[in-house]
Image (cartoon, rainbow, N blue to C red; front, side, top):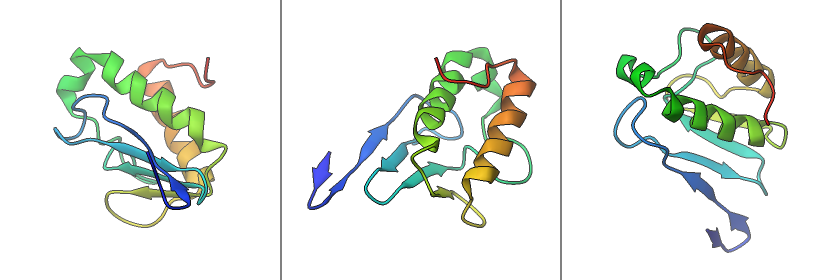
Length: 105
């Protein structure tokens, strides 16, 4: 969706933290909004029952990974604004916890 000078790439990939999880990327501003799915410290915000349907979690992580190199600011649902380094640490952590590949196919 484009409005004015900004493009909003949005995806709802299914419930993961809540029933309204939407990821948003604004390429012109290099901002990625991840909501409560991740944080710089602590554990991932995916609900336990998402592990019964890992394709939801995996789809969200792939989408985030595809946009992270074009991001400078990551806005999560709570806490401080994250850096790309924070995002990399989180993705490494969740990838190792769930045996996900660290690169995007």
